[in-house]
Each structure stands twice: as structure tokens, then as C-alpha cells.
Length: 319
Image 1 (tube, one colour):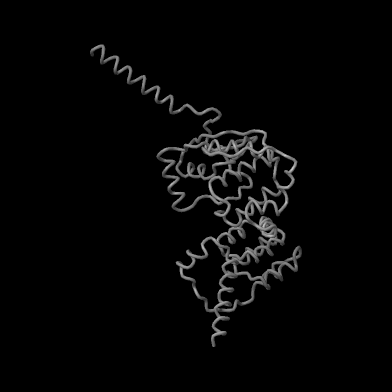
Image 2 (spheres, rainbow, N blue to C red):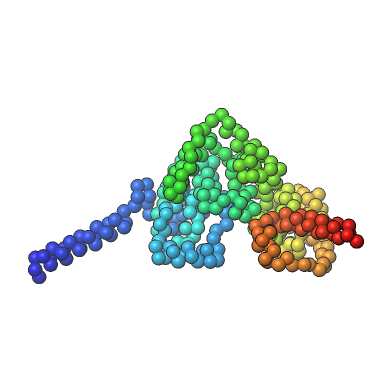
């Protein structure tokens, strides 16, 4: 082999090795963690991706790996996820062994919640969240609000990781205002009473929260269920599932009148009423998409009722 050829082969080998070294070099502060060593956040309020969105993420992870590091906090044994539940879930399903992570230590409960809540809000707007997710965000701001200066430090850190910018705001004497329902409502374009109702939904057990998000349980009914103790909510849910009963506001008010003393026999009796069979009109999907997309079922009911009243009033006037 000629000398030039030998040098070329040697140079190619060095380039290849250097390329490999660059691939495995982690950015400062990032380390590779075993997927199995991480557990979900103990009070994670957001739904994980499903269906096509999840399939796309799994395919991407299989092809490229997890590109953006997740954020975790160190536990006595292993780690707890703060930001990156969907990436972590996709990595598990793609059978990836390790993922890049930024490890946090000595966080307060409030600071941990800022990471959990705000990273989700950077990916989706508040209006895009499911009802139970909105309730959890408001609860975090209302009950777990930390110093605004510390919160903005965390927001800026998250923004840098996401390639975005967040304006710095210093911690001032007005921080207590963040804990009023009206001021939080203004931030999210909600009334103080709406904030109060959403906050109450946090007292629901998870199956009822899921039903609210699916539109299978009216918000006004869910709010009344939220006043029942957790064990009684669970009993009501199990009997509803067994009897395949759709709970009404009349039923839940009877249940609530016995809050703290409900028995299985009471629940079965109150949920045993035969539902009145009604002829239902199904709103065409084009109308739903045009006027009602993303609305709470209660809002849709109110709008339809007002529109019908206005139409029939006009017809009556023309007779």
C-alpha cells in the first residue's frame, strides 16, 4: 500500500473515531439515565399522547433517539420525571434503554410543580388543555405559587432548553396577588367564579376527571360529585359502571345530601331510577366543527337552548 493511501486510511479512521466521540459527548449538565430508573411525577395531571401522535413519536425516537433532554429530580432511589413524560413513554415503548436527562436536586414541592406545569404550557396553550388539566394548572398557580422571581428563573431555564425566550420579571411585593382567584382568572381570561369551579374539580377522583374530559360527565354534575369524600366517589363510580347508569344532577344532589354517610344501598337506590327515553337530535359534525369545537358540553347546551328560544320566539311573533 502506498504511503498516501495509508495516510488516507488512517485519516478516515481517525475521523470516524472522532465522529463517534462527538455523538456520545453530552452537553454540559446532561447525562444518560436508564429509562427504568425514572418514574412519573407523583401528581402528574396531564394526559399522555395516544393514537397517531404517540405512534409518530415512537417512530421518531426509534429513528433518531430522544433529542431533547428530559428534566428529572433525584430521589432516594432513582429519579422522578418533571418534564418529558411523553418522550420517556415513547422511549419505553420503543425499547430504548437510556435517555438524556438534566438532573435536579433539592427542589421544593412548589419548584417541582413549576417544571411540570410550565413545560406543558410551553407546548400547548391553556385553551388547548382538557378540563381536568386546566383545573390542575390553576391549582398549581393558586396553591403552589412560589416567589415570582424564582418562578421566572425556572421559566427562563425551560425556555432556553426549548429554544424560546421568556421575559425576566423580578420577585416583588405583589406576589401574594397571584393567589387570588380573580387575578389568576385574568391571566387565563376566566372569571374568578370560573376559577373557583375549576379548582373544585381537582377534588374529583381520576375516573371522574377522565369522564369530564371525554364529555361523558357534565361539569355541573362533576362539581357536585367533587363534594363527596374520595371513598364515596369511588363507590359511586363503581356502581355507575356496574349499572351502566348516566348520573343526573337530581341523582347527585340526593347523593350529596348524605355526604359522609353514603352506603352502597343508598347509592344503588338513587342511581336505579329508569332514565326517561328521549328522541335525540344529533348535531351534524360540520356544525360542531364550525361553532362548538373544544367547548364544554354545558356551554353547547346553553347556546343551543338560547338559539332555539330566539328562533321559536320569532316564529311565534310571525304567526
